[in-house]
Image (cartoon, rainbow, N blue to C red; front, side, top):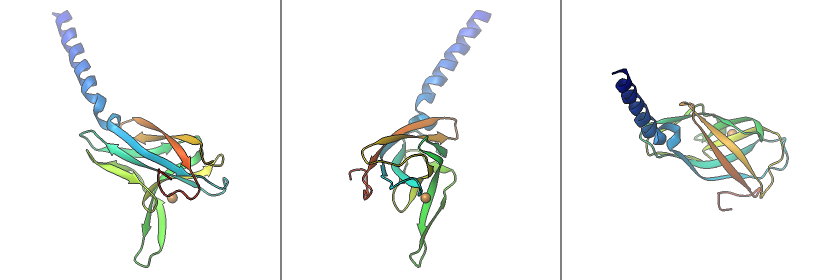
Length: 153
Ligand SMILES: [Cu+2]
């Protein structure tokens, strides 16, 4: 009897693990990541990408980690009614099921403060997105030219 109970429990655990494979941050896909080259390290860099939630539950980005910058943070640029733009930390970023959040010039972006080395065109760096469910998504980000405006430049 004890033996049978164990196998039922084991089977249940297995099926839960299988269904969780495409839920939460495991269901996150990052596309079109790019960054602009920097002149040096005195000013912060920025990176852009599309973060798509292919799952059926909301996911929350809680932070960023990269060895390129000591203080990577998601910022939001906003423009007031006089046309003056400013930016501030965006805090946690929620992505609804089937939704895509774009990090793009003039909007949300990954701000790379305290650069540890210059961002050189043609090189790439890795950036890890941290999620509230404990998951991490690592993205390799190609560095485009200093005048790039999108992932194809
Ligand atoms: Cu910023």
